Length: 391
Ligand SMILES: Cc1cc2nc3c(=O)[nH]c(=O)nc-3n(C[C@H](O)[C@H](O)[C@H](O)COP(=O)(O)OP(=O)(O)OC[C@H]3O[C@@H](n4cnc5c(N)ncnc54)[C@H](O)[C@@H]3O)c2cc1C
Image 1: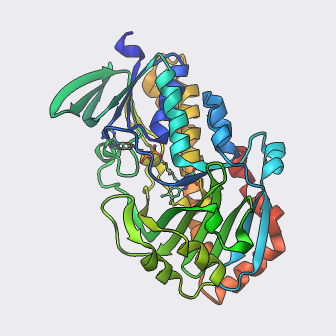
Image 2 (image 1 turned 120 degrees about the vertical axis):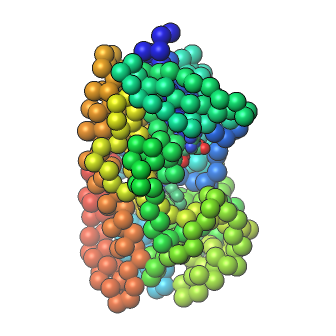
Image 3 (image 1 turned 180 degrees about the vertical axis):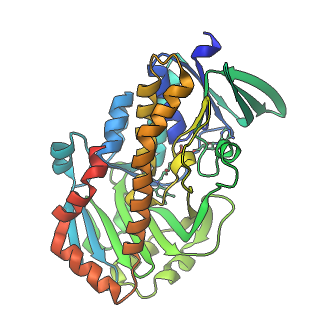
């Protein structure tokens, strides 16, 4: 196939794999370059709201559902008083209202489902252990420098998609000085056996969100429901070099000293945690230039409080596939993709930042937050999130 129908993708994360599938479904040959030698499936669990599961269906990724759990509700509670603040219905309400389910699963299962679809596609070639180190956009498309096994190669394509994550090198080349901004927070992630939950939480098929001053904890069942994924977020100035650095349970639990015994028991059930420093990508007025664009965290890395980072990468992929299908002018098609994705993802970044502030309000402001949450209840939360789930 000619280079005019070949697209290069940097990164085989959720965004890179999804965009490769979308582009290949649109008739392109796709080369995916991933610097790691094998897929990175770290990161415990992931919530997939209806906009994400709709995008997966659109991409033809259907193997996820058997390994995902469909929770019945999202329960928000105060982590100190243990007071229940709101219960947002998930399950059939989501399917009926938004035409797609709200699922939770292991990130590895989502990654596997995408990787399997990509591997089975005759027009997608995966190149693990290969890194895109530089590129030049020109009138005939793009030329990328690839490094693998201490060798270098130049590869031509009609376009380059920078799906290389929050520390994207493609973004750094396109927009010097726009590197990720540390949010002064860390996420502590772990997976625990469901049987080790405190008795009052055992056997409940719900997403739980516990809110405390400067911290919150989210947990939900994953796998076949026999495991529970924990994500605890605290204020934390320390930035970790690598993602997923190990952290001792006692260190993490000590950060929640004022909390009620129930959520503390959940935290204590972990054998160890992994720590993620939280970053967001600063806004840029346009993601790409010429035959190059950005996608996923490279474009709009956001704080995880709305659980929309991977969801928006999946939405990006679908939009990229639609705008480039049958395109004669690739740069114009990429700008059209950016024009439809930039406003929505900007709103998501901002909403995620705001919800983080609300979650972490100190006393006495948290009393006001709790009152509002109790008053609007789960239906009110659903209404606030409709713009996200409708896609
Ligand atoms: C604590 C936490 C909880 C979260 N929970 C949710 C959730 O519930 N729901 C949700 O939707 N999202 C969630 N997210 C967000 C989600 O995980 C990310 O938004 C998503 O994984 C981003 O995918 P990506 O493909 O853009 O980037 P990445 O997953 O970072 O993938 C980038 C890939 O590019 C590769 N790479 C980098 N540079 C190069 C290069 N030069 N050449 C080749 N390859 C390269 C990397 O090795 C990597 O494999 C959460 C995030 C965190 C931190």
